Amino acid sequence: MTTVFALLIAVAAMVGNTIAALWEARGSRLARYGRPVWQQPWFLAGLFADVVAWVLTVVALRYLPVFAVQSILAGAIALTTLSDHGWNPWNLAWRDRWAVVAVLAGLVLVAAAAEPDRPEALPPAATPALLVAFVLILVATPFVWRTGRPMLLALLAGLGFGGTALAVRALHPGPLRWDTIGDLLLDPLVYGVVVMGVLGVLAFAKALQNGPVGPATAVLSVTEVVVPGVVGIALLGDRIRDGWAGAALIGVVVALAGVIALTRTDPEAERHRVH
Image 1 (cartoon, helix red, strand yellow):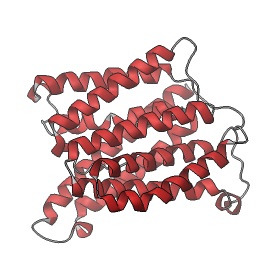
Image 2: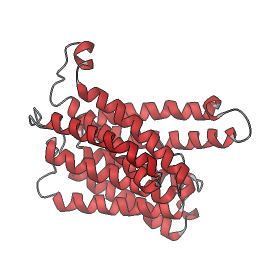
Image 3: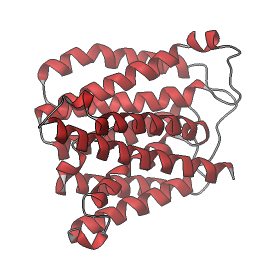
Image 4: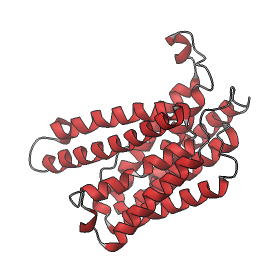
């Protein structure tokens, strides 16, 4: 039951991301003809939906491996594409229809392959390794920023969002380990969640300003699924069900192929994708 609950929470987070993207896109369009975007009710509602989706993601990461949650979240692009065509799959081009089917089928495989729960404790090197990786990413950020290359910025954004997921997953292995809010604030991973999340938002916004949306979204999606997924398995004790490794790999590849196809065929739908 816990696994089903966690999967439903992850799907709800994906739906929340989709709603946030649609509302923020509407607010951004209205901002072209009136008040600034941060004063648009639709945009503000989208930000609220994004916060709700983030909270749901945190809950899902409490019970499911990073690769499963991140793969499910990447499915938001399929819902966004459907919404742009009146939620009628027959309004899609045939290639888009197959891409949506690929995303959904891949996500089903990934979800089925995920081993629920987590180890009682992280390896001793897990937290230091994550913090060192975060520092290295932050050190590289000014150099990537100065290049202005959208694909590098999208890669940086994917590492930021992926780092946030890893930090959330690593924060509470087994029973919660803080007795007070003060204890929580002393955990450096808490600040990793915030810093890497902000980095992801800013880097992806910069990538969209400097280049085409579709390829940037594809790079972001692949990075934020593959990199944290591998790290979660190698470092955080995330597990795949016995005998399901092949299915999990196929599911991730098929889902990401569908995501990439959708970003290439309908890039405007993802201009305001928010995580």
